[in-house]
Length: 120
Image (tube, rainbow, N blue to C red):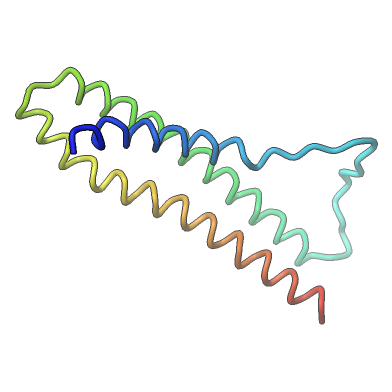
């Protein structure tokens, strides 16, 4: 159990870092960045994806920062303080999972709806 408590914050940090760097896009050649004024729903969808990306990046940065602070306090704390930090970690982990799950589920729904509209 003690090893799990020591390894879990490290794994969570690694997972959050990979989640933050995963939406990197690369292109080759010229890219047309002018907005498509003819299709308003496409613009709204792109704006929604941008907002979700910003929420994911800010949430990841906040989650990693909080995890670092709680981890340092946990390592430096006494036995009573460590028990208190364990209580703090449960809502933190639930919140981090909800943040990443909400963004992922929303992206899946958006992609599914886009495929459904493309087929119609």
